[in-house]
Amino acid sequence: MDTRPLTSADTAPALRDAASSPTPAAPADAVPALQTALKRTGPVVPRKFRDLLALDDFERHARRRLPNMIFQYVAGAVETGSSLSAASDAYKQWRFMPRMFVDVSGRDQGVELFGTRYRSPFGIAPLGGAAFAAYRADLRLAEAAKQAQVPMILSASSLIRMEEVIAQNPDAWYQAYLAGDQPRIDRLLDRVERAGFRTLVVTGDTPMLGNREHNIRSGFSMPIKITRNVALQCALSPRWLLGVAARTFAFHGTPHFENTDAERGPPMMSKLVRNTIARDKLAWEHVEAIRRRWKGNLVIKGIMSPEDVRIARESGANGVILSNHGGRQLDCTVAPLDTLPLVAAQKADMKVIIDSGIRRGTDVLKAFALGADFVFLGRPFLYAAAIGGTEAISHAISILADEIDRDMALVGVRRPMDLTMAALTRSGPHLP
Ligand SMILES: Cc1cc2nc3c(=O)[nH]c(=O)nc-3n(C[C@H](O)[C@H](O)[C@H](O)COP(=O)(O)O)c2cc1C
Image 1 (cartoon, rainbow, N blue to C red):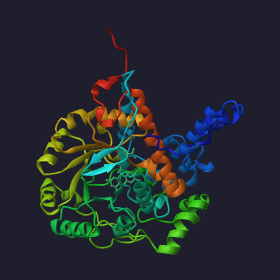
Image 2: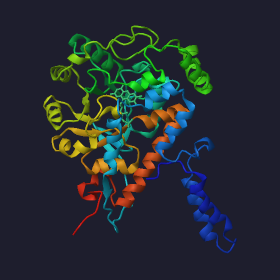
Image 3: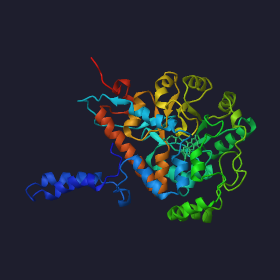
Image 4: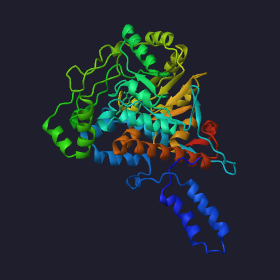
């Protein structure tokens, strides 16, 4: 499957071949070449995205577009950054042993998850405060995910009402940050169910917020304080200031944390900000109570220990998301990929999903080879939203889908699920 809109670089050779064929001597060659080129030509990548060739390119562009405090809010990781780097470094430890002369035509990267068939094996992770970085970002993420037929998880810490997001994309999932307070949880679940969500993700790695020194250093705070430093940063980022901040306030008023509880949360400028009290009381007994009440799919996010995967399974979860929160919670955690084989061994009929540090098609395939059923990515899609809304997110999705398709062919498989550990080896010499 070639899902990526073609660039002129893709189509030029065929068009050039067709055009340069001497007529009428070789019309038989020229016409099919031209037809193929035209058939394959989807929407041409807009000029402004031409140098966005890989997901890492989006970060570079977003850094230029956003005030430093907003960029750091998205990019940052806690303390030494070792959880963040470990998560992505783990992917570099594995190398492929590709197989040749395998018929890899008819490749299909689609994957079924919780009764829905997705066109690609990846989705958009929950991104709290996404609308700080891009205008109405959650709606843009939901829209692009719907167009590409991949899942998108709406964060509890989002600034757009969940009811609006699910109207945009009826397949969106909802991610909850819960306090250990059952009546409050029950009221929220009723709202989520009424809104029409079918998949609930409960994040477990946030009994307290991680130590986000990067936010203090860059001037990002909640509630947002307009210091001289912050005012200067905003003035130096006019496109963000007008296109995101001013536009949001002008058309929608002060953003509120809309989806943490059954009731609307406080405005982001308020001293109250979010009621995060008692998140440290959340325990497995609450998960069990949620399971009894919630009829849809239940996914536990932020798990890393195989022992917790076993408990999640026994508590009736349908899936787990193995994640170190992109390095934003505890520093010095194990890399999610490193525990994946042990975790996958515990899954029985649960789905094992992984995120944190995935940036390439090869990363996605490595995760599948080590036992994942699906993967999610966070930051790259938010950078894309900041650069160019739905269109740029769609471009990011198509880049990754295209890499996966090409990599499956080169590794020698037709579907991500066909990958096993036999496709991989640890990097380093292999002695006889
Ligand atoms: C700006 C930002 C906000 C996030 N907010 C949430 C959140 O509200 N809930 C949650 O479970 N995870 C949240 N995460 C973590 C992501 O869901 C995901 O686990 C992580 O970004 C994956 O790592 P990656 O960014 O390297 O792909 C957030 C991550 C970022 C970058």
